[in-house]
Amino acid sequence: MWQARMIIVNGELMPFADARIHPLSLAVAYATTVFEGLRAYRNASTGKFAIFRLQEHMRRLQVGMKVMRFERSYETGYMRDCLARLIRANEPDDDVYIRLLAYIEGIGLMATTGPVGFTAAAMPRDRPKFAETGMSLGVSSWSRLSDNASPPRIKSTANYHNARLTQLQAKADGYDGALMLTPAGKVSEAPIACFFMVRDGRLITPSVTSNILESITRDTILTLYRELTGKDAEQREVDRSELYFAEEAFLCGTGQEIVPVTSIDKLPVGDAKPGPLTAQLRKRYFDIVRGNDPEHAEWRTIV
Image: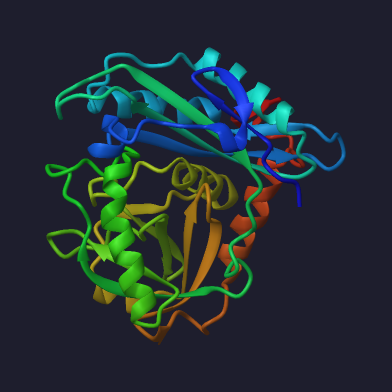
C-alpha cells in the first residue's frame, strides 16, 4: 500500500511529518475547525484519479465556515487546484482518502474569527472490515446533538465529541457500532455515517430534520435509488422500535462508503446477512465513483 509523503498547509506542499499548528490556536483550544472527508478514486483502465463530488464537499465546507463565522473562506477553484497538486505529489497507485480541515489558527479569545488556515492530507484508507460481512449496531444512550446546541448538519470537529463518546460506548457494550437517537427519541444516525433501512420493500432514511449531517453520500444513495427503482426513498422520522422491522439496513458515508448492518440491539436484521438492495446500490455506487459507468460525470473531478 502506498504511503502519504506530502501534505499541503495554506497552499504550500511540505513533508507529511512536518505539518504543525500552535497548541494555543483556537483550532486546538476551542475546536474551531470544520472539515471534509473526500475520496479520489482510481480508474483501473485509465489510471486517472477522480475526486468524487468535490463541488458539493466544498459547498458544505464553505457553509460550515460561514456558520462558524470564520473571517474568510476558500474558493472551490483554488481548493481544487490544491487538492490536485497534493494527490500528484504523493504519487498514489490506488484510491486516495483526503482529509481537508479549515480552522482558526490564530491565538486569542473564544470569539476570535481569524486568521484562518487550512490543511489537506492525502492518505490510503482500507475498506471498512465490515463492508462484506455486515456490522452489529446498538442504540446508544447518548443522544445526538440538537441543531440548537451545535448544528449537526455541518462537519465541525466539535460535533464529533458526541460521536466519539457514542462509538466508545458501543465498543464497550460489545457492538461494532451505534445508532443515535434525537433528543425527542427518533432515530438520527450512526456516529460517522448516515442510516438507511428497508421495510416492506421500501427504502427509508431519517429526514434531514432528524439532527443528521447533510451527507453527500446519503444524497448520492437517494439519487441512485430513484434511478434504479423509479421510486423515491422515504425521508421521515423513524421510531426506535421500527428498526426491529427492518428487512435490510446499511450505513453510508465518504469514509464508510456503504456498509451493511446485520443486527440492531442484538436482533437480526432480515436474515442477518447483507441484503439484495444493499448489494445493488453498492455495485451501482462503485461503478459511478470509479467512472466505470459514464453517468454522472458531473460528480467526478478528474485530477
